[in-house]
Length: 335
Image (cartoon, rainbow, N blue to C red; front, side, top):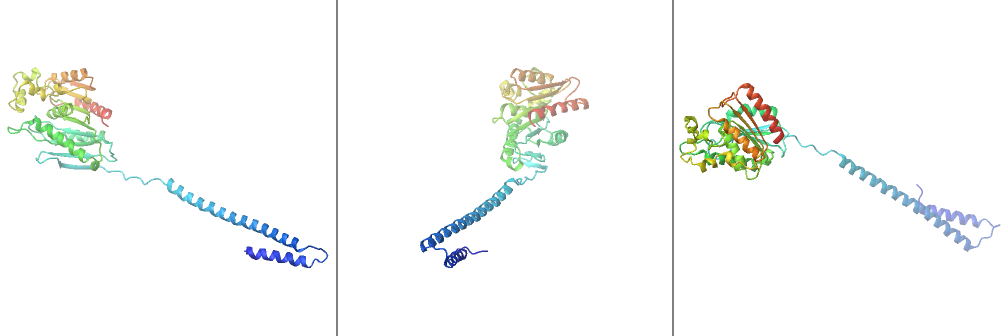
């Protein structure tokens, strides 16, 4: 590579030498100086142009590679979040009593928008167990795979423990436990309820009178009592009398209204689906018919099905029909 200062010096020498030996041409020293200075300026001009060009190329190259690296970094797809797997926990304790436990089934790929269905077993408020709801739990896991399921036990009533408000308080404790562990379980605070018999009564009563945050998006009642002031309950009937006696000695009308979903429901109630049997010896048909009428009057979304020939338990045909309706209702209002 040519050294620029040496290049300028050589040009000047050659010019001076050539001019010195051109005796037939007379050029005075002023002209020589002028030409020399001019050539220096020309050489400096082109030299600076070369330097500027080099720096320009370097600058463009640096920026090009820098931008290429940035673009490469920005266009790389973000690291994919690991999908959550199915998870279950059995007999999770939400209180100090042995009956204050629940099973939870968390679907795969759940998010903080995943809804929760709470199952509440029956048994006349004095008996029963969450395992009684296992068939419904398995149907939900199969046909509604995006919903989390909580199958709960609650404290059972006896001669020393009235079911109300004890069992309502247990439902509240479960809801609070789920809310406190929402991030751990990766679920939303939107919930639905599915109850059978006494469990259906508790589910409706909690949704209608105790859901202060309006988190309930639906409630399903399978042969659940709704109105303890119903004349059918107040007539002499050994089975019905036993149900009333379970609630203690206070059978006054104000108390019966307080524990009756029919008397506690308001226009803010969640969508409700009802299933009853026309030949049920425990739950009069009027319990479902009157509840449906009250919900309609309040403009609450509801569905009502009466299986005329069924009792407190449904046959296989009725069960299939009920599940298909319940599944569609859940997909509409909870999933």
